[in-house]
Length: 121
Length: 267
Image 1 (cartoon, one colour):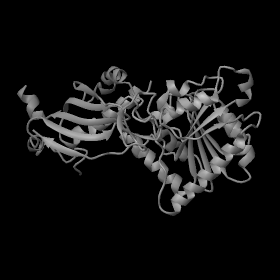
Image 2 (cartoon, chains in turn cyan, purple; image 1 turned 90 degrees about the vertical axis):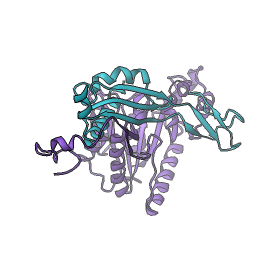
Image 3 (cartoon, rainbow over the protein chains, first blue to last red; image 1 turned 90 degrees about the horizontal axis):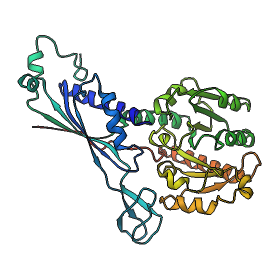
Image 4 (tube, each protein chain N blue to C red; image 1 turned 180 degrees about the vertical axis):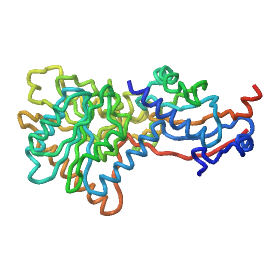
């Protein structure tokens, strides 16, 4: 449901970055999204064309890298793979773990095309 | 004239300005997708900290008893603490009216079709809401176990409610919102004798499997069961927050994220 809001916020950031670098056209936008971020990559992909329509990012490609779910145990010190609703230590089973990766929804990279490149196309 | 909005580019220097970056430019950002919301949330928290209050975001399914819990909390604690409530619903002033009837200031945010509150909505509400003198500010989020967990409002702590009529596997089904909880309140506990399917122990085990060490408090707002444990938790957390503020620190709820760094690479 809220993926459109997330996409609109993303587009705001992308527009500002394009403006800061004097670009009027965005080629690609790369994100890293974890399973515990609360956003669904598929829904983000669906919402992206609507959020980017009429902006510098209208023609851009959205690339989503999935972040792995990993926890680090405060008791035994092991770092293990986890599952969405099973975040205890995979080695000793203790629930005192810290999430190492898996809740991020990060804008990693924006690829911009300058006006000069566009003229050459 | 500045270098951020593009107003320094004129017809005279346009050709030079637009040729500054040659080729494709890859900008490495490493910023949260909701950076704007997070910035606003941080600003909201500055307001809360300025007034030395403790802000708690209540999240749950619709109908799990958030407003009833607030009514019971106000009844018991309004002599001891000054309480304020920001209500979030898609439509109606109903919840704010219920809270105001208890003699406590309440502001209703109606989100229209939005399924969650965000930091900007809460900030707008703060303009209509005197924080001066408040000890506890409750933000009752839109009843929804999905979206509210993604949007930081500037709150210090999250309380997630789970009513016994919903099923004890809710933490398994909605891990994001339960993982974000600083306290989990199992509400409507007076129904437990007739709801054989719900096990508080199983609900707690499901929560622990999310690597959550949040306390689980079983209570009934209507029948006045277990409320004292919740009130003690509130008093304790307010004292801890005040101690942090005195040391120039604050608490941040778990939905908060940080910008990592900003850099530029041209090819």
